[in-house]
Image (cartoon, rainbow, N blue to C red):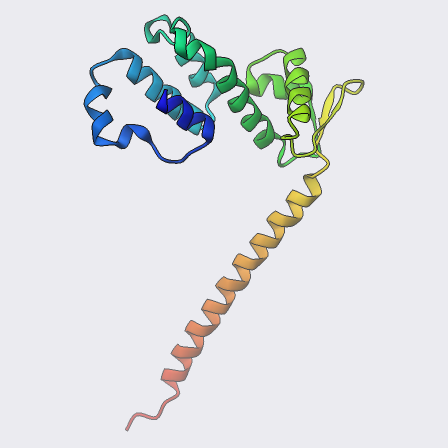
Amino acid sequence: RMVICNILSGSEVNPFDAQEVMAYVDQSIEVEAVQRLRVAYQSDDIGHFEFTIMHPVNRISTDVFLKEYVNELRFAIQSRVLLQTLIPFSRVTIEYVAEKLSISPPEVEALVIKLRLAKNNGGLLLDAVAGCIVNPRHNETKIATNSSVLKKYTQAIRQLQQSLGKQIGDGLRYQP
C-alpha cells in the first residue's frame, strides 16, 4: 500500500531503498512486480508498465488491493506521457498519440477530456473534427526553453571570459 501511495503521490523517494523493505524484495514475486511497476512508472515506460500489470506471474491484475489502483496508475502514467509527447508540438494527431500510448484513438480522446475535467492538462484542446490535440502552450514552452538555453550560454561565456581574463592577466605580469 505504501508503495502505491508513493507512486501516486509522485514522490522521488524510492521505498524499496529502505533497509526494512530490502529484506522482502527478493522473497516475493508480488514485491518484485510492484518494484518493476514503480520503475516503469518513473521512467514513463508504458509498454513495460502494461506488461508488468498484465503478466499473470506478477499477479497484479488479480490482487484485490492492487486491482483498485491499476486504473488510477494507468491514467497517471498515460497523462504524463501524453503531456510530455505534446511539449514540442503545437498540434499532434490523435492517431500519433494513440500509438505512443498504446491505446485506441477514442481512449486518447477520453483521456484528454478527463484531463480537461481534472484541470490538469496544461490547456490542451481536443479538435475531434481535425482529429488532433492542440497545445496552446507550445509557444510558451518554446520561449521558456529558449530563455533557459540563452541563460546557460550566457553563463558559459561569462565563465570563459573570467577564465581568459585570469590567464591573460597572469601572462602580462612582469616577471624578472
